[in-house]
Image (tube, rainbow, N blue to C red; front, side, top):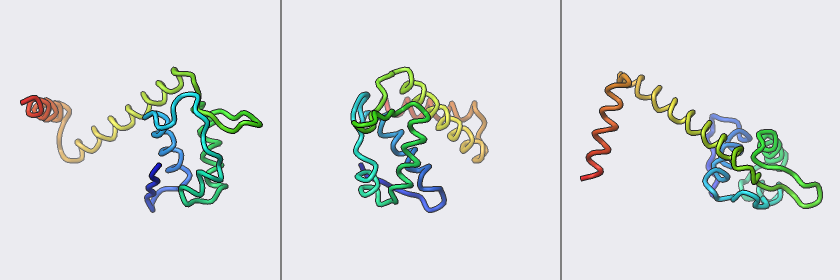
Length: 123
């Protein structure tokens, strides 16, 4: 997995976001065992405590769970994964609408642009 960090955001929140993306995209499939915290931390180039904090947040969200002697695993509960995917999609759509509004586009004009773009792709 390629880790990309922005300097203006806390590292652990970026780790959570990137691990969430990996789970939602299927990089880590439902039921898959995750690499150990130290292994993930070394791969990402971060402190293991920072990675541990990110893993704790992912556990709290229900996307992963721990088995005391076996490690951490991705949930097999599709409703949890679908719910997380829906929340992420809604946040991205909201960010898109906000960005378009900052450019001076209302929703109607934005939808026209999207429809026009879709028609051009079909040609």
